[in-house]
Amino acid sequence: MNTLFMDAQPNRNGRRRKRRKNQNRKPVAKAEPIVVAARRPDSPRLEKPTRRMKAASAKPRALRDSIPSAEKERIVEAPKKRRDARIVQRKEDEIDETERIRRRLLSRYLAAEGRAAITHAADAYFKEGFELPLEQDAQLKLLEHFDEARAGQAVSALTTIIEEDDPIQLPVLRQRLRRLEDHAEDLTLRTAATALRRRLPA
Picture 1: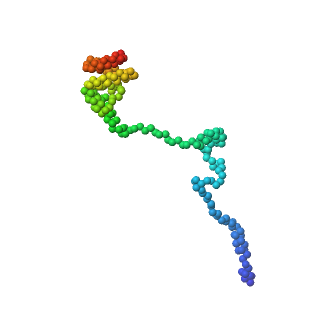
Picture 2: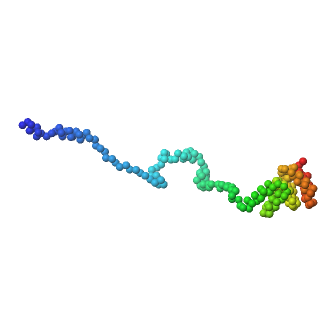
Picture 3: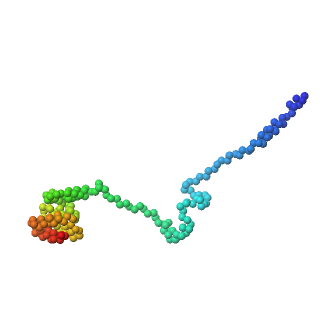
């Protein structure tokens, strides 16, 4: 009888355990969605810029206030300078054909030795319409030309050159002038050679 009565009794301890279990559980907060605000690089800022947002390279307030107003306007209105044009030297392969021929013939003339070789090289140079530079080494060789007119041109050019510069090959110049004095058929050439030789330093 007692056993049946106990079975009919409700299990109060089981309910209490369930309630305790439910009471021990902590309420779980629902995860809220994360909102990310993004803006385009060129779009203006919505919030006011703070000191931290300012660039570190910005000029201090005291320095900006010390600049005169006219100087500020000049700095703002001054246009950016373009790059200066570079001076490009002409390469050897960009020299025109005429100049290349002139240099080749002049080099051959300056390297010639003996009156015959000098005369031949000088004639080839003059045939192309070129003129010898007013330099002592070029004019000194021309004194050996078989044509006395060419030798006379050299004497005249050397007279002008020696007025400003000292002769570079004094013994050779004196020797060739002496030969013209003694063996030239043109009297004017002999006189000019004598005059130039006497002007040479001792």
